[in-house]
Length: 363
Image (cartoon, rainbow, N blue to C red; front, side):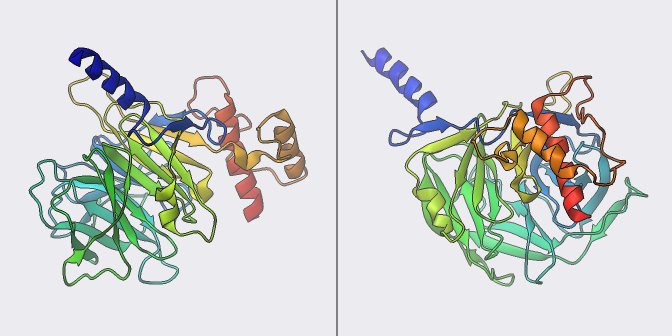
């Protein structure tokens, strides 16, 4: 009888993150994955976090897991290498996530690096490094550019030592949120703005989620949508514009969105204007042909022009009608075959249209 109980318990764990929550799959809001290409720069081989630039339109920031220097890497949305920066005088103990958004100076974009990995739960004090998003030097992409001006936000948990790999930046308040990793129900901790850069901040536990083994996450640029990733699943929340961020954590049931599981996939971030999300993985060193790929999952409902709750040929035709008569855009291919496989899928078409519409709106 005991053996049958174990089997039933295992089945429940596959279906439910906890006994009180059900998982509903949402396949209408976001499309399936588009392979944007291989992460080009060999040194970026354990991508543990990823963030969309707020300063540049075609830049993603990433960093390695433990074992690297205190470096961040800039790459294109096709995985092409742009630049390398290193924080001066800092040891990267276990960098796990990166966020990009506002900070102390209004109108200036900042990067936040979370050195908070703690596999054996031995580190009492964890750190988040904050600095202004640097200028990229594409003409000398392999040179390391030093960052000497940054702030260090030290913090500790109120309920013991924790391992964490998920950092969230709330763009309206500049509050920081950390999601713990290993508990059966992970904790959500807040560092309220303005965080001290002189003394240790005491994180406030504000909620728990019926998830375990969380490895990444991101808040949307407007703060109204949330992605949290485990090793196998991406979960999604949406709230009303004026609602508190705590609304995310009050939802009794969970919603998953498309995700093709990657080997050691930890990193996830939103695209500009929440038009989709990116994921990238580490490169497992024991596996052949282990190159990390950059993947994109486009939002489908953003182009539901006729609001019939589906994206179809009618919406595509309406988009082309809207841009008819506009000047040609030379750097956008007619057929956005992003992964260069000689075929065009619906996700690639949406990706190309989003760029096209954005460019037209900016003209």
